[in-house]
Length: 325
Image (cartoon, rainbow, N blue to C red; front, side):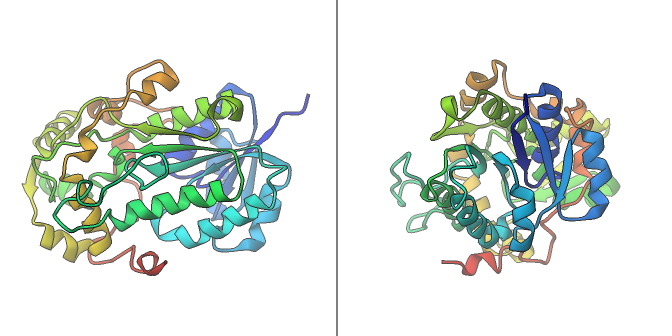
């Protein structure tokens, strides 16, 4: 019997490569991995991809071959690529008889039809709106729903592997990192847990998980001081957290990202959701364990920490996406 084909967009990303390895291990699907660069092809095949195809959200000419024969899609996109994602959703909607299930990566707190939000309560300061990045995540969900697709959404807390990437140099060379989160506690989530939840949802299918929205978090809320302690223990060296003002953080990364970090300070992301346990039957991965243990793709959290990063000091990666209406 021919296996259904699942298309994994962002297959070389933190979640994508873990999901690829998990689905290959399970064997339910023919796993088709997307790549933007030919340099990624061999590594994706080593992780278990049965097929590797060229795919670019900003180039519709790559979509037809990628989607040929596909019945399930893992949908993930970097924040600045929202416009391309919205257009791709229309293409998926044109294939609604073919595409039986889409699993979308989103963010906990996206302004959605599953809850009612009062901007004065769900904000970091009086008069502030829900952060634009959270609104964008909802737009990404809504575009799939409006296209008539069967959608499952993973709304994740802030990724553990994104937390300190902008400070790799100072961590390695000087033993410190800085951001404005301080004593605020957030239940940071391991990307391997997001992949595990996505794998379960794909394997169990749309019959069980369509039109379901899951909050995926870590097992406990942690402050930056807690994170510094765990990282130091994992690296076997002293790691110091140095407080940073929100003004300086905004200067480094732009207003859209700063607005989101301000939201991380308001306590909304300290909640620990049971959804990961209910999906997988086990507790979420703690930060120290994430750093020191190996995921399905063969990397520890420490391995991932030193790899590429979208956010760079002195650049506003969200400048273009912030102009979308």
